Amino acid sequence: MSRRVEMLSLIAAALLTLFAIAGSAQEIPDGLLQSANLGRCTLDSGKWIEPCLVTYRTFGRLNADHTNAVLFPSWYNGRSEDLAQFFGPDKLVNTSLFFGIAVDALADGISSSPSNSTTQHGANFPAITIRDMVRAEYRLATEALHLKHLYAVVGISMGGMQTYEWLVDYPGFFQKAVPIIGTPQQTSYDLLNWDLLRRLIESDPGFHDGNYAQEPDLALANEFATLTLPSPAYIARTVSRESFPEFLENSLKTWGGRDANDRLVQLKAMIAHDVTRGSGSIEETARKISNSQLIVVAVNDHLVNPAPALTWGRANGAQTYVSQGDCGHRIFECDGPAITAAVRTFLGAP
Image (cartoon, rainbow, N blue to C red):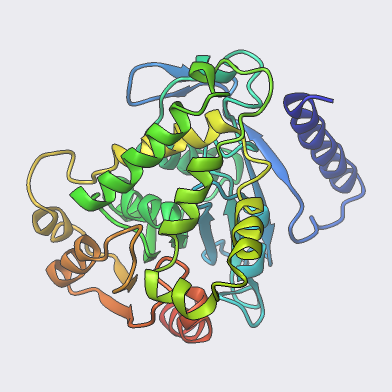
């Protein structure tokens, strides 16, 4: 079975399950994959995705006045199933208090993506921006979930970039924001990282300008991605010379099962990400935002430089949590419990 057919079957099965649950008047189980058909999603480029499907999973329950929803978009190369670990009574998003919505960002292989589109498949899928992702998520919240308000938006890495975009595009729609190891604007060093990864994907012998019948190996791209996630000190501290071959083999496996065109479309969206839109400084843009914010960064992050996020936070008086550990972008491996506690305290109660 092809990956596209397999993915469509997965979504169809989830929808059938949802219909069966709705028909029996039962509540939707936590973590069930659900899908919203938004029809046409018009993009910043003037092109569109049609049909535009956004998939998501919910955790906890809406309160009586629908004021406790927390939206959590996926990170780069991640999916809503990866976010399930952050929802629960004792987790980052306390489901005893909040209704969590884990969203598959466009082009993650579950929501509308090059790999699963039947009308714009593969290299024919249009370029998207982080803003396009957020626009689709806003439509999910308002048109599919019929919410008039979110309590908070929380995101990690590319999800953090989406959180900054939410702050600029829809600041009146929610109260609190928690961008974790994200950025409002890529630095030159970030662009160097992302551009090299782009070149490694596009130059892979099996990529064929995105017109491949068999998934390309992307060996060099995957090894580079493994290199930039933690800091050099973290790898040197946790991986011995003797265990390096096993470490590398296991690390490369973590990138498996993801479509190359999906990865490239999301990667290009991150490369173009800049909430200032090229007009004014980070400080000027940040000062226009009055939402309550907790900004989480890692000083040793070699994938997303923390400087723009800290500049943003200083400009509008946001709370900050700065990890001093050597885990880099894998910040939760150093500071997981502390970050969880800080976010839970910041979110408080609706």
